[in-house]
Image (cartoon, rainbow over all chains, first blue to last red; front, side, top):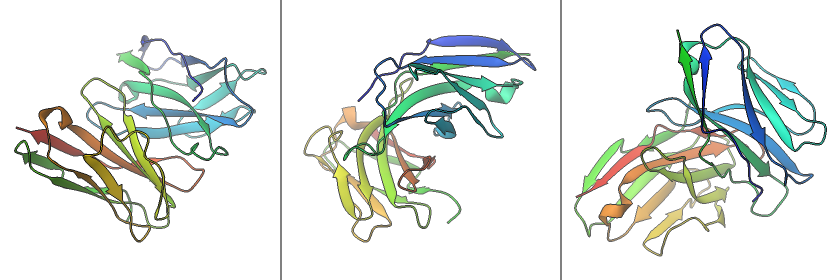
Length: 113
Length: 112
């Protein structure tokens, strides 16, 4: 499984944008980039995913580098409810065993009022 | 149902007993996944199914762990002869085959 590298922790101020980086230099052509987050005492929650183009949804934006070796999850205005562990995961849905998500340690985001 | 339902929410069992954890996925979701999560760690993959077929069980720690999904809907994760090290949060998720996962609230297993 291709690996991702994320900072262990990041801090943000409320109402400010947050850029969460992820490196995935060994990404293959059929790997989708997925982001999940896990709020305290809850299960992981899907945030966004993409393949090559930048993606936007109501929760966040995903910016993918042209060479696809890195990506950035963007929260446009952080709120206290966004404090969570954010996981960047590669998922190759075309490989026979590629359906599963392998979670790393993620980035623990804290948001200060 | 509206979400992924897991039961029981909490299970305390004595060492050596067998336990069965149940997962009821979102209706129509093809894929079902089992994870376990220790405190302060990310979820650890155990096994997953597409329909009733177990696609990958590489994450099951040993042969005391097994899972089934006989009719392609509800799944059961069974742990035989439980040990204290099996204590963890066990999480189930479901998805369309290539879609985002929806996780259940989990079953907190404590082996005493």
